[in-house]
Length: 124
Image (cartoon, rainbow, N blue to C red; front, side):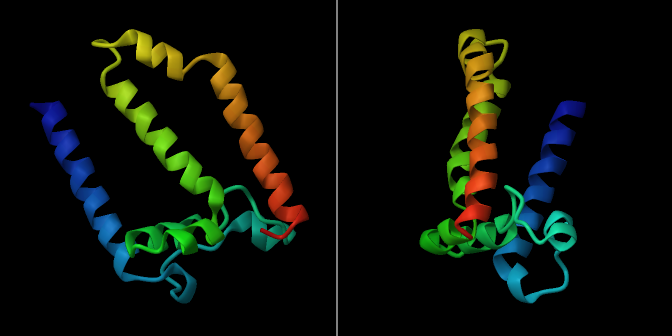
C-alpha cells in the first residue's frame, strides 16, 4: 500500500513538472534556476541547456533539444532503460547487472566528461 502511494505521488509530481516544462519556456522565464557553474565560471557544465532541451522535447522540437543539449538526448533513453532494469531488478537480475557493469558506467562517465570538454572548446 505504501509503495503504491509513493509511486502515485511521484507520477503526479512528474506530470505536474512535465506540464510546467511544457507550458513555460525556461529561456524566457525567471521561474527556472540558472546554471551556477556557468554563472561562476563562464563555462557550460554537461547539463547546461537541459531545461530548455526538455521544454523543446515536450513541444516536439527534437532539433531544438539537440541544439540545447545533445548529451541529454543520448542520456534520456539510457536513463529510461536503467530505470526499467531497476524496476525489474529481482525478476531479471542479469539485465540489471549488464546495465550496471563497471565498464558501462565508466564509459558513460568518459562520454559525459568528453561532452563537457568539447562543448566548451567548440561552443556547442
